[in-house]
Length: 301
Image (tube, rainbow, N blue to C red; front, top):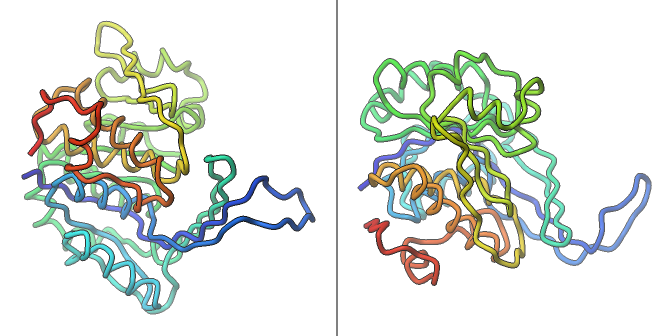
């Protein structure tokens, strides 16, 4: 079983669906409102756990009701919460999401996620040490992200760094991670002086650019490689990138090569966007195997 540690955010998503987005000063009627569990860290942890990974979560929540429910949700998904800490002076993180025609726009409030510290990472060294791969995103403080990446680099533990949302980072961090997985808009913000082709050539077999329905691109050291997405009708794209990253981590630790791991991640993401909510739609391994697109050669158990 793959041992995966996720360091990142834990939040509650407040989701509104509507047939259009309001203009400034405009009030419109929405179609539906719901609360779901989210945070890019929690999303990626749940995605990996549902696909059979032995997952540990490192993060921080508030002492409010939302924080308690976030931890219960992780436990219900068989995720180790030993290193999910509770703080009393700040509320749990939240994301406020508007979904129109299957596409989302998000306002993210970090809350307690800003309280993840380097010291918390140090306390979690034992679980990091035992991991096959560690997954990180950008919804926690940079000092904590740097501590995770540097520790894993020194110990020879592979990392998947999903730089979302995009923020300015030291290029040395990119050198130290095994895989760097921005989407197209994040790539442009992080590498404004580089074309997509130039960026992928600079970081072969490391920089993996996810482009939604257009698929995934990377450079294998000799040429650019395009891995097609699976064509489906989306209901809600929230969490698709997180599903990809969690599934990609599962496939890599199962011994699949880069292209097969990306295809596995693409299928998980495609299944996820056919249901509403970031985590609700994330497929189990059984659901993956029931898909007409599942490839028997993946042989993930």
